[in-house]
Length: 95
Image 1 (tube, rainbow, N blue to C red):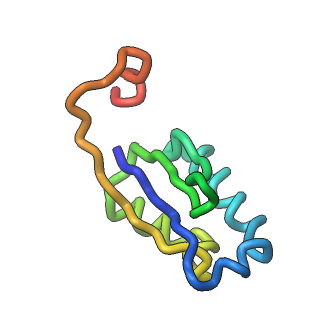
Image 2: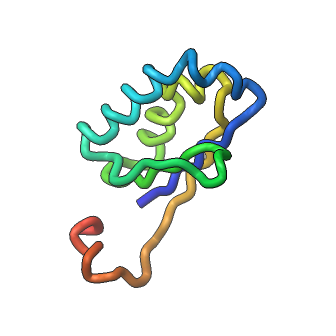
């Protein structure tokens, strides 16, 4: 399981221009069954995605394809989580 942090970068002002492509990228991640959650980092510093189901290398390629990443709107950090304990409501996510 991975957490992807997408933090606003120097080219943040270009976000509106690339928002449709970014939203399509997020939609595709959910359709592919890789993204489990996506949302904003508060207060307005970027976004985060919870991902699973593909190797890190494939996720790196996926993240690099985000128009926000390609255009320098955000910088991306990918962190892998090795869950030690899980709430029973989340157990299906790790299966």
